[in-house]
Image (cartoon, rainbow, N blue to C red):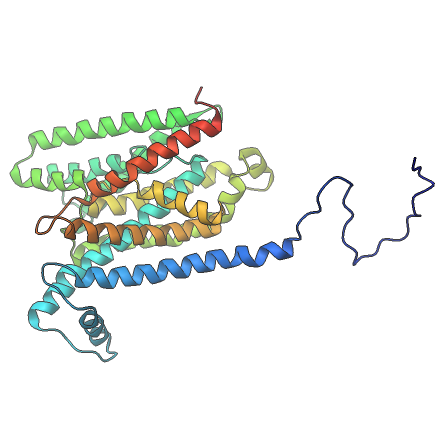
Length: 379
């Protein structure tokens, strides 16, 4: 039997020697061997998403009833930027700059806003099922836009619909937040049931406005319910640009605090995070992004749910990458979705909101069952 006297004498510790590992426990993998690979993944993902987004934007600008070759699109853009190239004929220039490019830019802004809002909401609520469309925030914001149309409100000019969507979106986020909290935590069942109730209530309000609207207003309201970018114009891009940019620029500054909040509210408070102030600030950012998207595109669901989950699977839950990458990937998804919506059933055009719901619903069902299995049930 080995006694303490048989062991070698303990000498001074060698600062360069690796730490001793107790017998029976496999030695830890040195962090130095893991960090380079983990650092490369976000860079590769970001570069890949950027490349796909640029390619999709160029293809989307050229494909349609009036086809424009990719080289001509690049030439026209270069010509407008004063970098050479050549202008297209009168019809081509009009189609490219008055129809296609406003639509591509609007899809980019709306997708980025919805993707970023989804990542923020999942971080704030600490729940993977939180998404502006699923828990009724998009529908709540649409009520404001529909009310502005139905009542003929114009007090802010081109900003009226955006302002109304922002106010009702903010009220909806606050209501969802308060109703889904219980005992200092957000319950999954309460969150989903709150979303069902909010969606039903918003649907009833929209139906009421449709009942009292004239035929022109009914067409506009139908646009909000189905979700579409068919009416994209440069004035609409400029109307939504400040809200979308403000939300997208503010969101990454909260990434570190969201990482700390993921540890739990109590540990986050011990680490210096004012949890309630953080939640209030991010609720405002989410309302800003959602209102900007809904005001110009109507109700488009599941982008904010699907995109952050796919990125989390690829690179982990760190919000420093997740928040900006969700914006980038959301833009990719919506530019691709809009291209599919207007080319799959030519000459007709599929509603973009219907297309994203068709693709996102199966993913939501899978996510719901996965979350339930991991938590051992909802009760």
